[in-house]
Length: 65
Image 1 (cartoon, rainbow, N blue to C red):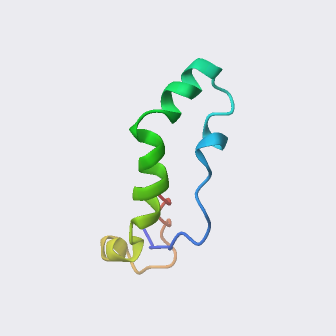
Image 2: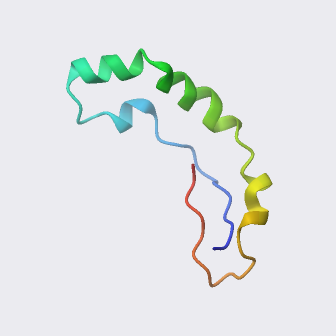
Image 3: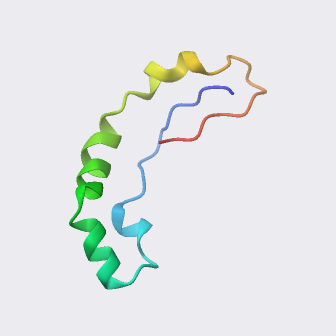
């Protein structure tokens, strides 16, 4: 796999839960998952993991976190 940095913003928590009912959405947004998505994911330095991927441009790129 070729390494490709994530150049775009992750989707928001609201986008991920558009199809959930209000009760489930409220539960998830009040749990640790919201803070994790807002604080931890943006802080991940993806370039540190580039050594794990092939330099061959014909290989499949990684998926963003």
